[in-house]
Each structure stands twice: as structure tokens, then as C-alpha cells.
Length: 120
Ligand SMILES: [Zn+2]
Image 1 (tube, rainbow, N blue to C red):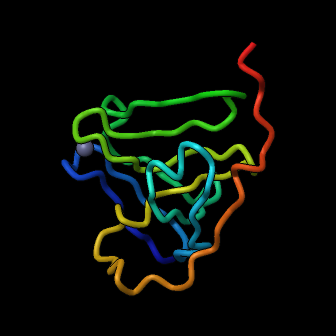
Image 2 (spheres, helix red, strand yellow):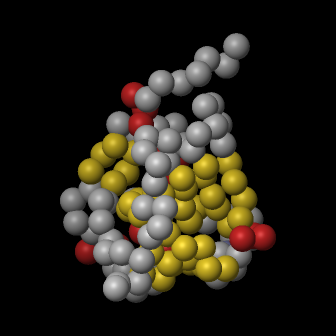
């Protein structure tokens, strides 16, 4: 099976994707548009955190369904658990050896259209 290795910038957080790289997308929701990362998809079984759990920060907002993970040392967004579907998204720029100049067409996910809980 293909295993893609991924890491944050400082290398404290390391993960593996036990699958082919697929589903290149960006999202226009208020957090993803700020991150600007191109993200790919991994199922719960395909994503393995191999190092750095103690260096992972996690951010949530609004419905608090999605979990947005980043390295608390270098600040890089590595992966997130999606709200739209029960699966992981991960930062393609974190994948070892992936040439971002060779990105295929990127789909835009309309995250901005997902419901937002009012802030009372
Ligand atoms: Zn880091």
C-alpha cells in the first residue's frame, strides 16, 4: 500500500496517509480561507498520527464539530477532522516530496454556505 509521509515545518508533528493522495480542494469558509491551504482527504483509518501528539494544538469554533489541528511549535496546520463528512482533511503542503507546482485542478468546497450557529 502507498504510504505518504507528512509533517509540520519543525517536524515535531508527523503523520502518515495510508492511501493515494486524492480530492484536492480548498474551502471558502471563514477559517479555511485564512489558512489558504490545499487539502486532501483521508478516511479515519487512512490517517495515522505518528509523532507529536503533545505538540498538537486544536481549534474549534461555532458548532465545534470540526477539529482543526496545528503544531504549537511552528504553527503549521497539518490536518483537521471535518464537519461536512466524518473524515480527515490534511495539508498537501505537509506531504514529503510533494511538488505543489504540480497540483492538479483544485475543487472549491463551499464551506461558507454551511450553517453557522448564531453567536447569541
Ligand atoms: Zn511544528
